[in-house]
Image (cartoon, rainbow, N blue to C red; front, side):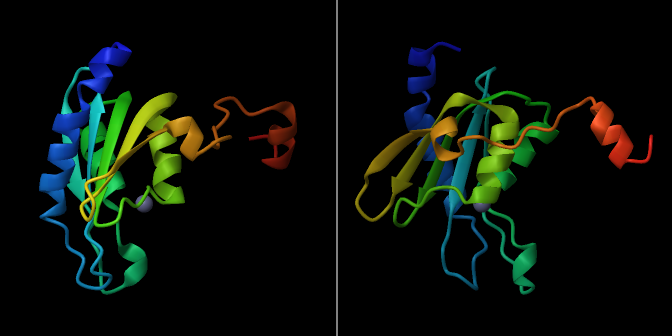
Amino acid sequence: MSERGIESLRTPLLAAAREARRRAYAPYSGYAVGAAVCDEDGRIFSGANVENASYGLTVCAERVALFRAVSEGARRIVAVAVVTRDGGTPCGACRQVLAEFASEDALVWCASEENGQVEEYRVGELLPLAFRFQTQPSAEDELTLGGM
Ligand SMILES: [Zn+2]
């Protein structure tokens, strides 16, 4: 998808994230988040944060949207929109998950419902030096793993 094509996603992606935010389940923090991702085929998937009484089980809106996309067959995310009350950016965990499916130059728009402002970031800017799993163990790894 061309850079111009990706830029044209900004309005519909933010609208999808804003709509998803209305369905957030955030009774503990009160911080509703909506997110939407677009894959290379132009398909949009949205998600809202889902909190839990056992706080650690809470899942962020960004990961809900990403996992929905991946479970529907998406593998390459080209743009992301996140809508919060104050323009909050994705947490570290979500940045790492995003880095799995988006290139460093994929766009991330973060919108504030309070003032309507939208900030634009690149995935590589939000998470430089993202962890990448080496698919083939090195000789040293094989020693550590007991020659598995
Ligand atoms: Zn997160």
